[in-house]
Image (cartoon, rainbow, N blue to C red; front, side):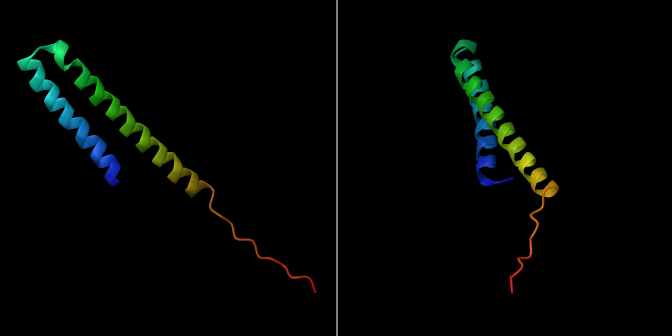
Amino acid sequence: MKLPDFLILSLSAALVIIGTHLTFTSGLISSYPVFMFAVALLFWYRYRKNEATLKSEAEKSNPIKKVKSRKSK
């Protein structure tokens, strides 16, 4: 896991905790935007993870072939 992915996932978890605290203190209406931002960060994390997986699979299935050049005499 790369640093940006770790930060996105950690921020999402922190926002869930903050949203839960806001739910108990202010009510669900006040905490709804915090929960939606946390869910958006989770979606972004999954998107980045899927893109990295697809990229690594593409590199494995299509290795770069080195072509030997022929010099004309």
